[in-house]
Amino acid sequence: MSGNLIDRRRFLTFLGWFASLGTITGISWASVRFMIPNILYEPPRAFKIGRPRDYPEGVNFLPEKRIFVVRNGDAYKVASAVCTHMGCTPRWVGEKKVWECPCHGSIFDERGGVVKGPAPDPLPWYEAKIATDGRLFVDERRIVPYTQNLTVKA
Image (cartoon, rainbow, N blue to C red; front, side, top):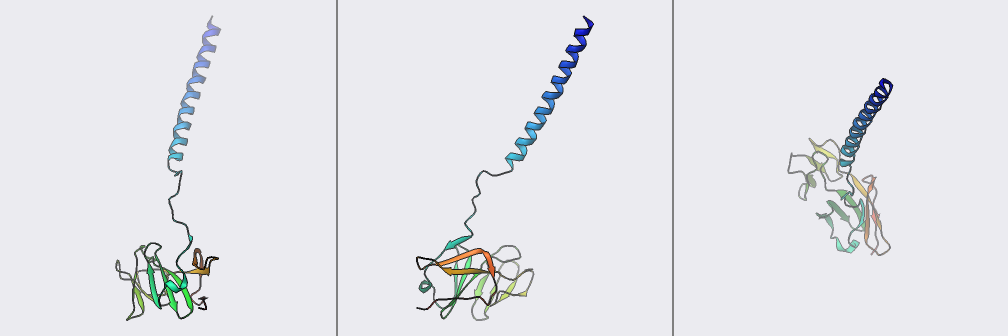
């Protein structure tokens, strides 16, 4: 009879440890899974905007996409409208030919380079192409040098 008590104790001990470890594992997995979103609500990084003729000469701000479309004759460029310091939206000051960030005073020249900090990096320029429907296609995943233009003949 004492043999059965030892076997029963071992079984209950094993069952207790198994239940405890299973509970800890389940709670840990649920905690980690809770931190991972099911759906990402991020805007696409490649998108179409208007036709080239929709943008007048100079710097055009598109607030819904947070980009600047810069037109110089038949040449088009697209720059980020997100300050590299804290993510504020700089504004174009045409008289000075600079972008000024109203949040912390960063200033970027017309090429997007930092003139005055605290911004650590220049404004990035994005690749622009003409889509099959004639609209401008901007790909924010592809950073291009300032010297790269999209030329559109009217």
